[in-house]
Length: 262
Image (tube, rainbow, N blue to C red; front, top):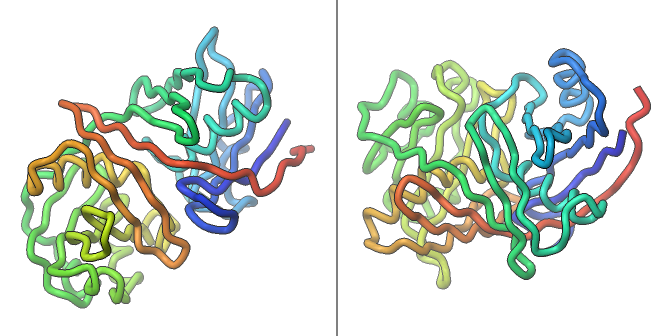
């Protein structure tokens, strides 16, 4: 089976968020095997993609668990399908996932993903959240996956040094921390911490923008947004909010291609 490591939401190699992509090539592999491969790759997510009629099936695993939605590994998968000649340049891929039908479309140098909006509702901070972040939030909200925490400034987001052991005890996938951007060219910045899912800090998190898009669209009064995830690797996400959908677009770069022999 073909196996790739691809930097997603990246303009240059060794930036953005690395994902592994495994093309199943018709093989039926069980969850334990997929989880073992994801642990072996030891990246924030490994995607497993296989034919489903004229469409594709797609699943995502962290080194520790299977997740229901992953943006950067979906972007990486669409990139791999084009590079391998399994999807025409400019074409649309339809993926059947645990979050329903997702589509990706190549638009010039960008890959655009059509994801469900996952709006976060105002919430009281759970025990350990403020202490774990070490900073008092302006707003706290929650959706089915994560807590969303707004801080006062971009500097606050960039300088944050959370207590991952404390955040690990909060029973959610992860914690999104965000603020309005002060860097020219961007509307908002964010970081994403998910120690309970086996990832202390994710470099660039597409699925988090399914919550960030509706949140900042409402607060800023605009549908098209430019986002920067301010992790050490960093990544740029083009975000468009349209009704109950969020369009996320970015670039991807293949770092290596190999064969999985077990």
